[in-house]
Image (cartoon, rainbow, N blue to C red; front, side):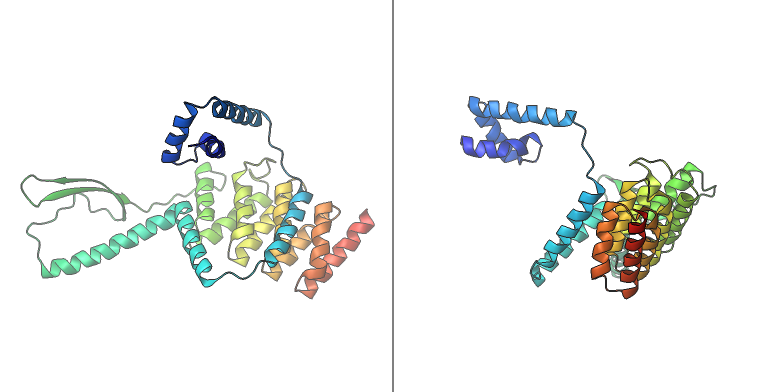
Length: 318
């Protein structure tokens, strides 16, 4: 490895993103090259200095302008080929499996069920030589196999496994365990439970129950913002939007999420409700920028009129 290649690899090496083969080659080069070792020390010093400085949050105005610029840039891109769409679909599906353990578990259970059916068909044609005995007959989906032990000199095996047993918990909405389960249901898109959990969490936020702390770590408020931005159901997005309403003025992250809904939500009802809720902060510069864009570009005449009306009201306030 020469110095030019080594200096291109140093940053990846220090951040642990270099392959093992390239890392070994770089380490061999560093053992012999003083100049590249000094370069490593400089980058390490820069890393240390960066960790000492607290990261600054971008302003709401900058975020809004950036989103608008990004949308304009995306509109100029040529249409993707069918092959690119297939690749993107496969990549996103893999990412969803990594971030959705419940879905992965269901797929594993479905695979086990299909294997069980296949084994049953085979067993009908080839009867087993010994009786299968289960140590527990408890109901529940098999989660994973923990071990397999074969009896020496025989075809008898012992398979150890864990089951997922359905359970329930009843308690007050203020109970921490109940809240954790509601948050889990809000993140996992199980039909019925997901919608109900977002509705309950939104009501808790509107009533100020452990949702009023103005920090980035409030799990309920964060869950509602995720639902507002990404949920496929417009009724769920409306619930999340109404739950965030008390915090639009005090939390810039909530305000950005509502502005994003005004700009990009595909439901006219959600966009209209978002404009109504943003009224108290209509004089904010980021809100003004979004309203100007929506008043000229939105497909709905009612939403364009509502944006113009709010702009006039804000001008009167100013």
